Image (cartoon, each protein chain N blue to C red):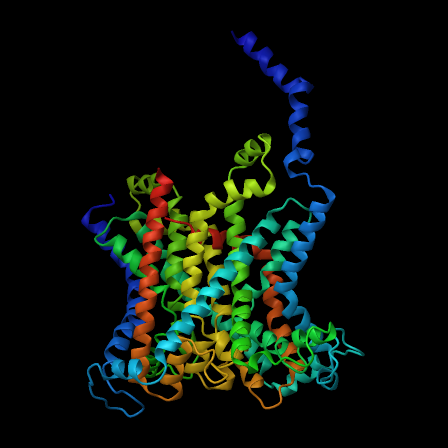
Length: 310
Length: 295
């Protein structure tokens, strides 16, 4: 019996007829994915048009930052800057004296929001993923419903609340409400991730006499780390991309303003220095753009896991 | 283990921080909005209850119904265009051509950068005399003179929609792309063996299997778009002559501009009613779709 089995095994491993086709299929493009030349051309044309729509404001913004104001405000329009210079990148630091501070504030606010959200969301997600308690389904639905209301709708009472807490015109006025609207989707995302960790691991720890808190800290947290990283990145991006309305309404101190609002003051002036505005925008967003190139996998993972049905 | 009393206590303890946070920062303000909507609250510290007066005022005086209709039209066009462009983008990025990963990264910036900064860039592009769009149109001889997109009612209306679409498209595209890539290859190969063409395979395999993703994304996008504030506030501030004033902008102006907190709250409550309807539709759709999955 073993002889036959072994010969078959050896044959399977050594026979080129059995091994090669598989590797050939892997290396060559399957027939179904082969395109005729005009198909390839139209795909690339389509992608070019699509990416032009997505990137045009950035391209134009960058070219504007290179143009001197005199050229910007002249007709006829020319797309390419003539005798472009990086002057705007030097002058913007004097036109917006607190630019560095605004860039820092944007980072700082988003980082603190991320820390708060993670601290609140990890235990909550664990509770939803593992425990049966009264009204758990209803509570989860309640959290999800928070997602549907934007901060703009609740602005009046939030303003009163912030004033009551004495938080107006501090970093907290932007951090506290900002975090609130990011908590629900993060709970949902992390819960989905934690559901995939086998329940047997908790039970084994329990049998070994570990306390519930110890189990969460030593068993669940390390295993959930990749999920927590995704949630942290999604939260940071959410906090970074959407900081406008709270910062506009609850804070009037220039030194606490995040980048978008700091530049809004610039934008609102009678004569907008467009080249410097664009230069400041680019310098402000550059660090995040670079980081994103490396983190894009996590973003895709977060986006798809967050929106899947339960 | 999981259903004992100590387990329930432990679970509630774990939940407490999130629950208290949301109750204070979201639930309490929601209740406060409803209460305020029945008062004449303004800048002065005291206020009285006025019953339904605020609601009567907003629905009889002024153009609130017009604002509601405009908001719904604006949202409808914005969401539909996002879905169509997002689907086209996903199909293109899903094609097996070299450079896929780079193209995928290049779609992300509008979603990643602070929304307001993207909007400043659009504000320049829409500039009538010197902006890119008007400039290009003139250079190609498509228009006779400069077109100041944000200065006229209906061009401003469409300009704000285009910017909203621009911000929403990356998320829709990447979500659709991921959903498209999770469809089993075997299905396509079987159809291909039977001689089905590309469009036919998309129409008969991709589209039906992506229906849950499309419904989910449309509803999420509907809610986000309905609540959209930054774009219109920065680009037109509701103008010219109120032609781009949506419900959110209208509420903000009443409450924060004119400091009529009571009346602003009444307008906010009407928004909440609309959002709740969308929300119910969303929950029902999710439940129905996940039941379909089980079968």
